[in-house]
Image (cartoon, rainbow over all chains, first blue to last red; front, side):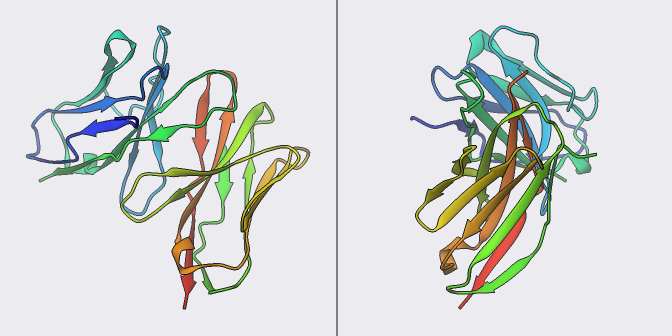
Amino acid sequence: GAGVSQSPSNKVTEKGKDVELRCDPISGHTALYWYRQSLGQGLEFLIYFQGNSAPDKSGLPSDRFSAERTGGSVSTLTIQRTQQEDSAVYLCASSSGQGGTTEAFFGQGTRLTVV
Amino acid sequence: RKEVEQDPGPFNVPEGATVAFNCTYSNSASQSFFWYRQDCRKEPKLLMSVYSSGNEDGRFTAQLNRASQYISLLIRDSKLSDSATYLCVVKVYTGNQFYFGTGTSLTVIP
């Protein structure tokens, strides 16, 4: 497909389990972003990948959160030992990263529920 | 101080009304500006980019004031389908980072 693809679309997990969320960006987009959005709240930045540069991890809320981007394309966000406060929609976006005028395109998100 | 600030609303307006949203940003090095629309339980989608000279797309007009560091969105002749949350977005060229406002909620009432 032509858009940003995320999987799974919904994930219910038990507290303490690890989860992996996947993002497949638009082909050729060098920039990839992860955000999360709790119900009724704004977007919270998590992490940003740009090409082969070191990622900007400044938004990760704790060391239980990590992300990688293999081959400059697909990214995986991993949450270890999930807690109930991790319940949110996790949104991935990609951008061509070419200059300042290019917008971000979002995937449909993964709705994570920790029970 | 937040990078981008918006009035969260909610704005409840009748069909056909004109409504305006404002947004302020703190980083003077900000390079690009956008308005995104987010429907309930959906992902944000680009509504329009905001250019220095101002730009219009049908019923929507976006303005940028760099001196005062604010961006506006004007919606004329509101439709029921305009009901959504509108996100003000600023991109800082250095680092290519996007900064999102918390959004302004709009409900257009029949």
